[in-house]
Length: 173
Picture 1 (spheres, rainbow, N blue to C red):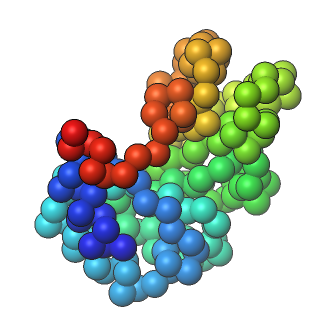
Picture 2: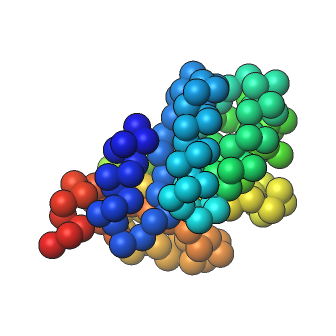
Picture 3: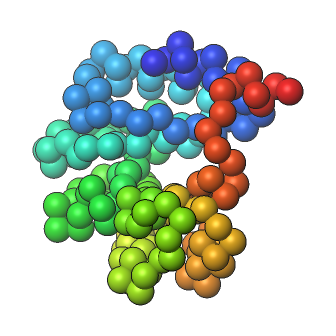
């Protein structure tokens, strides 16, 4: 994974990158040491975000987040509101820097955003603000989604509206 990260960093103009880790990968002490060393020798602090696709145990997160954060690595909970529900992760929020709300998990592609989804999005954005965390709105597919983000004051977003996933070689063209 570190070799792939190094390859991507060399080909991208923007060195702010994210990688998704399972709870098992996150908890691997050898991986933590290797990625921490890589960040300290190749990246500025806060240029790498580790996105946790599944939450570790609270005690594990408490212990391991110290090392990741000391290396300047941001930690994020991915898919809040759909896969990671508030009641399950509320005690863990002080140990991460970012939450990512995945709109694409809440509605079928191309369908309008319901009031219930907007309410859930606002709930998570407000929680991030309360905790002084970064908030990323992902799954932005249309100008209406951008308008919704602007209306709520959300400044970080990603989605097909901006660009679809591409191979690193595409960025060099």
